[in-house]
Image 1 (cartoon, rainbow, N blue to C red):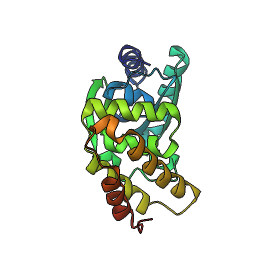
Image 2 (cartoon, helix red, strand yellow):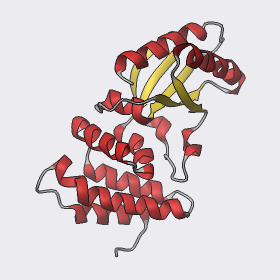
Image 3 (cartoon, rainbow, N blue to C red):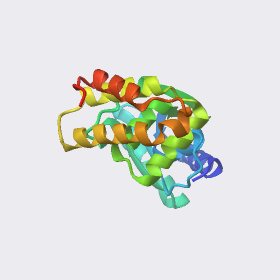
Length: 203
C-alpha cells in the first residue's frame, strides 16, 4: 500500500460520495497511515475512522463499500476506532495531521504518537518495524510517547490487554530505544515516565 494506491482509493471514493449530501472526514490509521508518515512496508488494507454524522453514515458506508469492491482494496472502518482495542486511543480526533481533500472527503492522519497506540498494543513484528521507521522519520519525542502511552493505559479498562501493553512498552524502549534515539538513550528513564503516567509503581 503506497501513496499512489492510497490516493487512488480516496479519489475513487470521492466519485462515489458525490450523491452524499454531507461531507466526510476520514482519520487514517494503521499501516496505510504509517506508510504516509514514513514507513515503507506494504499493507493489504486501509484502516480509518469516519466522521460524517449519523444522518449520512449509511450513504458514506455504501460509498466506501462500493469503492472497496471496485478497487479490490480491503477496508476496515467505523465511526470510532477507539472501539477497536481494549487500549483507548484517547482524544485522537483532536490530534490529526491534514493530508489531502478528495472531493467531499477530507483525509487526515493520526499524529505519530496517537497512531502508535494501536501498534504498540498489538506489537506484531510488522507493527514494530512501522514504529521504528515512523519514529525515526518523524523524530517523535520519546518523552511524549512515554507520557501518552501511560495515559492511554491509565484510562483503559483493566484487562489482559493492559498487562500486554505494559510489557510491550517495556520491551520497545529497552530493545529499540537506542536504535531510534541514539546510543545515549536511557530506556529506564522513559519506562519510569511511562509508569508514572499510567499510575504504576516501578518494578
